[in-house]
Image 1: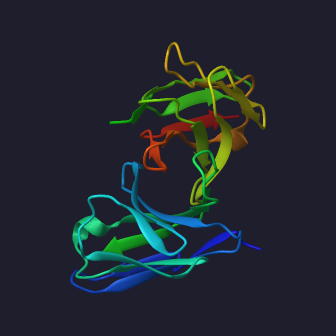
Image 2 (image 1 turned 180 degrees about the vertical axis):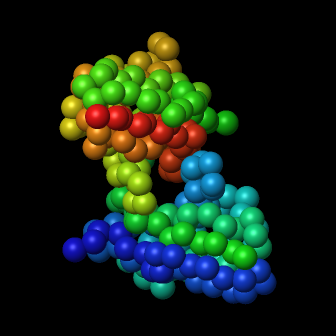
Length: 113
Length: 112
């Protein structure tokens, strides 16, 4: 059983479209995250939710809106996609606590044409 | 702010060679330190971690020691295998905001 799963794995779309990426974890964790990995492999956190509440919101354009319907899910909706949004998006989860390990999903490769 | 600096890659080695990937950090307080590995086409997996000074994390033959005096967490392995080819990320846990701050990653290529 996959601990942290994301769908879709690949997403190719046109500029200006709206798309969503879904994430689910079956680890019973309290906290979930979205990270963006650019073409140079640099990883940066975008959002973090704890028990469905937003805790971290880095300087991400407001075209990106995370939604957490319950503790096990954190979805990412992106409006008006731009070329620069092309990247790999990783979901992760952890138990609450400063030293807890984060477990990553397999990533969603988004290509905006 | 907190940051992590890793050596630039790619690091190219022959099988059974000794590996060192340097990692230094800048942080307030005493963050936990991590090494994550990303195999081609996959997500990140935790390789090892250390939560306080002088702790040594180890896993799958890889080791790293938390050195507060040099603010370093270098990754080492005595004898690499072709299957170790991957991108390795050093990271720290920002204790103020409970978020991982990653280095830029170092690609390791091991040839037979």
